Length: 312
Image (cartoon, rainbow, N blue to C red):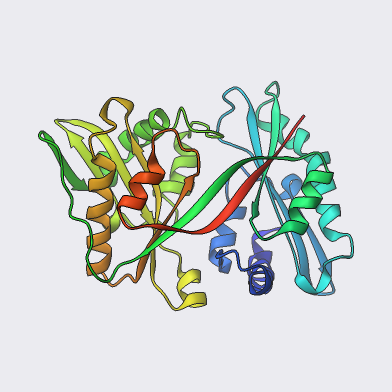
């Protein structure tokens, strides 16, 4: 694919979402940004099936920023509902398996490879196809939501800690360091480098600095929260959603309520700025107890996905 295909890709994902109900919506700008990702090779890491001028299936392989020590290549594929059960999904999976080793070697010549794919809980056809192709389910992830009307939690900070709004010049690289240190014990996570951090965290068009915050203990950043907003979701649902994309707390500052305080700060600001709801994603077996923190802040599970992995 090329960036010129982004509008056709967005139309394909919209047709698929009408049937699949995954809660994921994309516009052409979102998908052009994905194709511009340095970790994606449009020439070698994408595949498109066309019926005339109608894009009917796509596959994308994305490297991780680092291999630590395994390179986890992420595969995403979608088939137009009108063209399903014709072998296109199987063709995409076969292509991903055949192509992933070369894509991985292009960035990490000597690193072992895992191929990852996310499957919505109700998409049993995709799950069965991956299982038949050597993938195994390894982890559940939840998408959680809460409305922003009614009573919202109040931020409570421990002594010596203050919260500030996110400022690129002062906080960007420190937040990257906290992210990498705080996610070191998370399943499937790899350290981000500056390029990927700016591409998908603080430089993406979806990033909302006005709803992003840091918790400072003295001059040290102890925790941070980043928020994104996706216009395509608002167009599709009619609701304005604040997506809390990343929360990280340094190990030595855990169990002090910093994440809860940052979430409460964000929720109140989002309500004031006209957002209807907030949402976030969480590993069901997150080792930091994040699921309980989010439930205490009023979030409830809305959707479930399972991570399928194929080892090479």
